[in-house]
Image 1 (cartoon, one colour):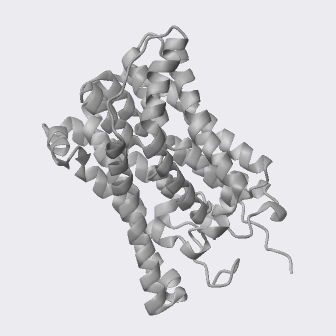
Image 2 (cartoon, one colour):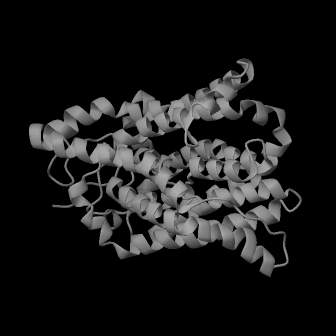
Image 3 (cartoon, one colour):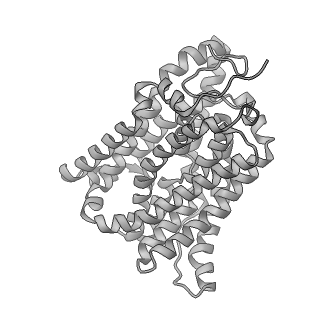
Length: 377
């Protein structure tokens, strides 16, 4: 029996819920609401910045945890071995995230911001912080492989703890010195990075794993995936929208009062996200990963850990520094660009033939899976 043809991008979009289908509208409204709150409510950004523990913003942490838990609860953890055995996927992800990504951001920052050293440094820091949070939801909305996303994010987390400070020294001090360019340094520690990983990935990952284990043991997989997951699913987007509002509210005054600076910072970021996502998508298609894992590879390559980048920039250069502003502009550009790339990805889905679709990939988020692989209720 032949496999059913994959749904086309427009078909998948039509099957999305109202919340998913009009994601760009909701995110646009959240961005505007955040900007208006940041400009219209005196002292709001100061109040939000004060609500933190050991440098971790509690409102942002709350939004990210709410956003990530439902998606990680969908992961079938008993199928992770199908991802860890995919050497092409793992090697491709490591090369894109830890070789191409930092090098590309370094090149773009120096090419497009040669006269703005503070912003240039901030962007290089953004390029070093690989995504471990929002990529989970981008991948899910684009019907990527959930299990692959969980593994690649975990892999990025390990490398982030081990390599962030080393790469920071290389791209901010060693390499510029060899090239006769201006040098700088960052002030961070493996513990600061590990803390970010434990909070923003560890907590929702443990919650998602325990939910599936306990839910399937007590009620069965069918109940878990057809009853429980649809109930908690919308909270991922609620968490995303809350996070976007908080981000824009925190920096609303700086963004609206320095539009030309924001535009200069945005140019290399736009090029970076487009090139990284395109490189991941083309590479995945070229080596035959199939749509789901190609999509996962592209989004994990394009996303960045903005919370870590912002924390490092503020700790090293100060909250009002140009470096901090550049790291803040990062997610403000990343969010609308990657939302647009979700629709690009879904549109390109029809170009993947049945033979190249991953046989072990998870079903789209809008189609709850039964215990039989490849079938839907």
